[in-house]
Image 1 (cartoon, rainbow, N blue to C red):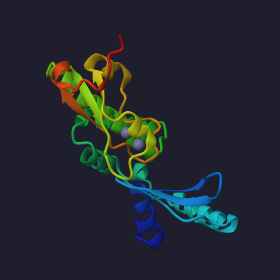
Image 2 (image 1 turned 90 degrees about the horizontal axis):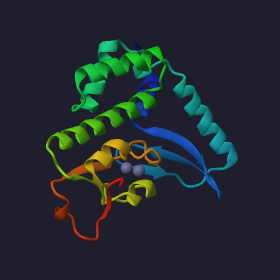
Image 3 (image 1 turned 90 degrees about the vertical axis):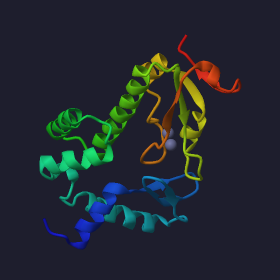
Length: 196
Ligand SMILES: [Zn+2]
Ligand SMILES: [Zn+2]
């Protein structure tokens, strides 16, 4: 595989989601990384078109993770999701290749599986439930903030799978589950969802 400038940029694009967002007032370039989101100042229509053309050609560059050898993909996924069992990762990578998923789809599926593993671990430890905590920084999105500090009874959490937030505006929902050993451990002001 070559390492042209385009290849290198395409590799960066695997970790940072770049898109042009058309708001009510203006178009902006939006960069969403693992931990933060950046919005540019507004673009003219011609500038927005130019950015979109560059993004399109980068997306078509043949450097997708999913086109690399299977063992490389599995290894990269294991590093990103160390709590997901190897067999699960291998079968998910097989599916992704067979069904031509995009990398984002694979990453989303693994993120979901990883959160489910966490829930199962807490369930096995016989806790009452979990508290959903979002990252309290300037990049937390409204969807994640809405569910911050909401407690779920463990069975209800397993049924609902509230994380990762499907409507998270960042590329990766960074919210986490905190185990709640018994319901009495929660402050009385905490909203609890039991499914009952
Ligand atoms: Zn979230
Ligand atoms: Zn979010």
